[in-house]
Amino acid sequence: MEDRLWVWGGRPLEGEVRLPAAKNSVLPLLAASLLCSGPVVLHGVPPLSDVQQSILLLQALGCRVNWQNGGLAIQPPVQPPCGVLPAGPVRAMRSSVFYLAPVLHAAGRVSMPMPGGCDLGPRPIDIHLDGLVKMGARVAWQQGVLCLECPPRGLHGADITLRLPSVGATETLLMAAVRAHGPTVLRGAACEPEIADLADFLRSCGAHISGAGSPVVWVQGADRLGGAEHTPIPDRIVAATAAAAVAGTGGQVLLRRCRGEALGQVLEVLRNAGCEVTLTQNGLCIARSGPLQGVGRVYTGIYPAFATDAAPVVAAGLLTARGASAFEDTIFENRFSCAEGFLAMGAQVRRAGRALEILGGGRLHGAEVTAQDLRGGAALVVAALAAEGESRIGGLCHIRRGYADIAALFGGLGAELGVCAG
Ligand code: UD1
Image 1 (cartoon, protein in one colour):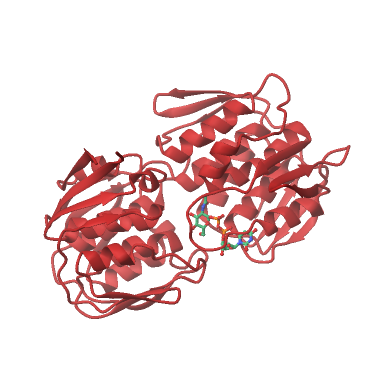
Image 2 (image 1 turned 120 degrees about the horizontal axis):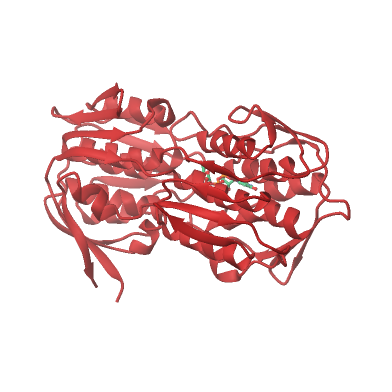
């Protein structure tokens, strides 16, 4: 029987969180290590299940991967990899798409089934593929398996305008461009901090990149990249999750290493809800002692707008607010799978198209609920922390993709919760 999380809610949170390295940095960075002919060390990597799946992919491609003082050391393959990615890890996460470009460079070809990941609605990869085709790759689908092949002299640089600013496609094309022949320009690129982090790592390996983190990125391809040691940026979505929980429960928490600008509009919304947010030398302090207020309508969007990944957790923190709130996701169709669990806890919510509407004013009580996806699952934990009585949350496999140990995260802040069998 699968584990479940029990949460005895209703206690204010107090203490400090040391933020782990960002999942959305670590996963592309692990794939990018394949572009390097020297060893790579990534510091402070959380043991997420998506990280474990990435390790399986790297090992299948011939890399040696070792945990080392909380970080990961990756040795490049001794021989060129075969280019066939194992279906299990590929289907377990969306981030297997990051292996397309590095494996194309390493093996000249790559084949894999369609990447899996959270069911947030349709998640095509056409922007990744269109860009790679512009750089010379040939693409074919053979019985549901995606096959890409390099031209005989390898990928070449290109001037590429992205149809929309996809985070993953910007990262794929950055990884393709750093080892392509000649210059590349990416226009309409996504600007998320994790893209700048990937570029920083690649630059320490010897890549020539400018403009990463802005809509236009210039790259001059290099024949070879060396290895590097890198400390990925802190996880802004884990920060948003802890901050949203403080909004829901009250209390005061210091988010160590948290950079306010990375959270952008999330902090503004929490301030409007009645939280005090203070930037200190050590990080960001979030507190709530007064009443929680509804925040009106919030739209998610591309960085620096309100992060789509933060929407379910912040919504969960505001379920008991006086006055209405609504979160409308402009990026994904099915962001609020957690609505069902919120209803079971007594929240006054309804889904309307891509939005979650919170009528507000209600009290929450413990309930038996099931996580349907990663951030929706974390949102159920946040709601359970604010609820009176005991909740049991199933579907922990989704939550473990992005939170190494959510019980330890909130247990360290004084919450009563733990994992139990069945
Ligand atoms: C990344 C993040 C994810 C976050 C999302 C949006 C990682 C590992 N994951 O996911 O946590 O929720 O950004 O901030 O960094 N699209 C296409 N064609 C494509 C690619 C994307 O139509 O080829 C669409 C998607 O369906 C979606 C939108 O573009 O509607 C944004 O997706 P994208 O930015 O690519 O998200 P991911 O990189 O998958």
